[in-house]
Length: 65
Image (cartoon, rainbow, N blue to C red; front, side):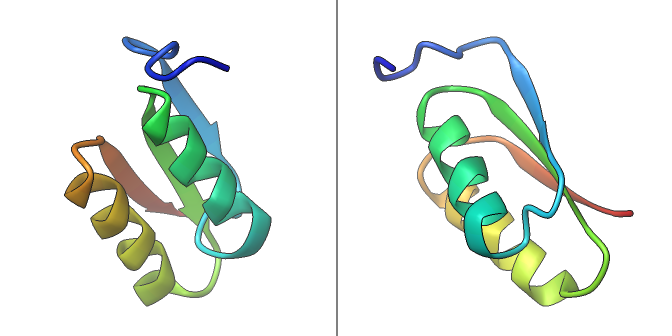
């Protein structure tokens, strides 16, 4: 996938606060997508992923499922 190929798109990543979900959220953001990630537990982890994405110029939001 080429860099920024997802500009203007929004991705919903379930379980995005840790592990594979967090890695997918970061990659989608790096490719230009806005990211909405959900979590059940681990609000602080979810917020951390959002901060990481925003620190690199991406857009993200965490939503409790």
